[in-house]
Amino acid sequence: MRRGQDPVLVEVSARSRRGAPQQMPGDIATSALARRVNAARILAKLRERPPERAEMSSGDLVDATGMSRPTVHAAAHHLVELGWVRETTDRVDGRLSGRGRPSRVFSFVANAGHVLGIDIGAHSVRVAVADLRGVFVAEARIAFGDPSVGPEQRITQVRKLAVEVVRTAGLRDEQVLAVCVGTSGPVDADGVVQQRTGIPGFLGVDLRAALARDFSAQVYVENDCNLALIGERWRGRAGASQDVVCLLAGERLGVGMCTGGTLVRGQANSARDLGFLSLMGDYSRDDGIARAVRRRGASLVAEVAARDTPPLPGTPGAELSALTGGDPRRVSASDVFEAVRRGDLDAAGALEEGLETAARAIATLTMLLAPELVVITGAVAAAGDVLLPPLRRRLTELVPRVPRVEASPLREQAVVTGAVRLALDTAETDFLDPLAPAPTA
Image (cartoon, rainbow, N blue to C red):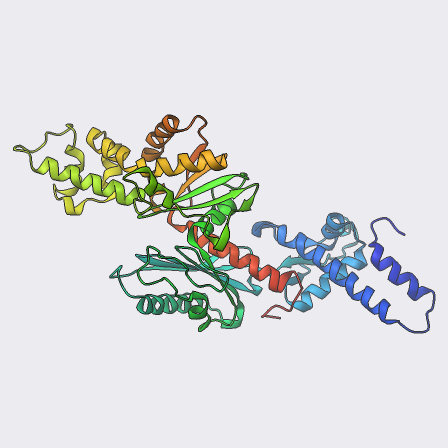
């Protein structure tokens, strides 16, 4: 056996040289298995390459896999036929350039298929299409004019946006290999929402069936907090962490958890239930950071407006009142965060009060799971500079050992990012792992 030659192919070649009168069924099976195994190794190496260095010469693949050059060529040619790999001769192999012999160069065809991620919320829906490297090629978001819109109208808008984004990317239906939809609340294996969520009327809705009307690809439905965690582990703060709590903390509190690198689902995929907060007194999972801070900020502005004289610049409450024109109805969480940045002490107090429910949820989960990292995600993560310091201080008062607490760089894109990642996993399982032909083959 020559050094670097694939042992399976050597065995098959030896049989052929012995002059067997005919190829037996076992030989055919072994040859097919060898071709599949070798092609999978080549595909894995090509997929590992970053987009800016996507190409590998046959010499590069020989070095990377330890296989012989003829075996590399045979496996790569099979992948070219399947549509997952592209071959060019634009480079010259450095080891062969003295003879002027062009090298065969191969690269993964990332646009041979695409995946679709969808994040359905109470106030908006976000959709993203990505190629097989996970590069977003088209995305869009729309806000629901009425957050209390019924499920039929909401799903109609979601379907319309999803189809439009796929068309914007220039794709046909068969080029979408997998679809993943995120929504709040526990979701069963059939894609049906099992408990009351923050989205009106979604209890009992079959999201898989609804989205399957427009796409022939497999549709996967997952809880939005789980997807936020998956997104954080893929492209956010939690890539190097095995024990993580991801708190989706906008209007409501939701949590995704993993221990030992494994997503915690629990019975009926309902392990994220923060209903225990109601046992602690006047706390509720409905008190997300954004909602709680906004309410307290509105109360503060109302108190300032009720005073006999307008607040002087630099006095407590003055900055938040100025930002909102003294109108409590105009107060947003972003206004409170900005007032804190400007040194408004009353706004800082409103922020600390608004963080209390989240702090108690994190403290309880810390005692139970001992995570190394807690990620605050969702739109409020953009205010990490002002909300993390008081949150960390409060945690030191509640638990003896405080985990690392960070704000997500993905922010409001965490859920759709996780949806794309889960759709990619599905596409890999259904198409790349079995080496099925690409839609563009």
